Figure 1 (cartoon, rainbow, N blue to C red):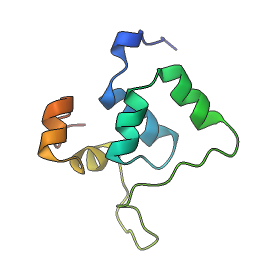
Figure 2: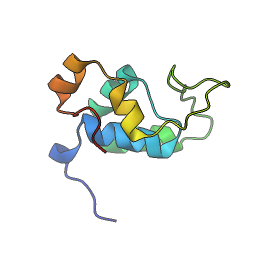
Figure 3: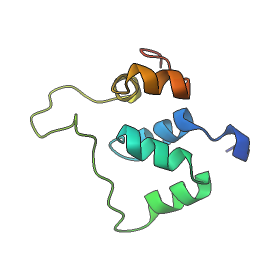
Length: 90
């Protein structure tokens, strides 16, 4: 696996990691992850007993599978523009 350089770690990559590693994340969790070194985020995700709350759009009644596109679309237009995460892209 090719390692990312620190300057390649950004909000979109943090969101992708959080989606792939669990149930996704809220915009605040993505921002927090993107502002920390990638190695710290991965270590925290892999730490036994780590609690990662699912995003508010996931409930026991949810019938739709939440994916990266859906998660990105939960960001406000301002958040997408600020972080360069276009709506509807995958």
